[in-house]
Image (tube, rainbow, N blue to C red; front, side, top):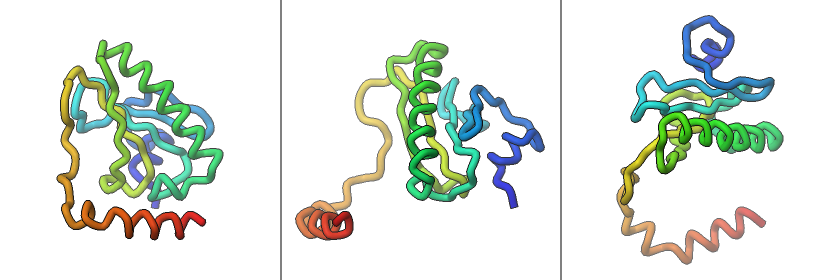
Length: 130
């Protein structure tokens, strides 16, 4: 079954498409955190961003950079926050949210157990990457 993003890209349901090419497209989020909140989405339906083919993954980030520059210009924002959250829609996407705020942004709290085991976690990750 096509995702809501695929349905928007195909014109089956309405959406505010601001960019599109053969591999990716960008739409305004219908639940914006700020004016200009944009989602950059691969055309291929993959749940996890990191499961995309390398060429699509690289292209998606290139599109995100280009769209983020437009978001910053249009909204006159100091910065554009970039988030990959991945639990709202099972179709990989990147959030671009303009902001003029300085200081900490909402982020998951520090997990002390994870902080206490950094050495073990690093060793396990190095092994997985070998």
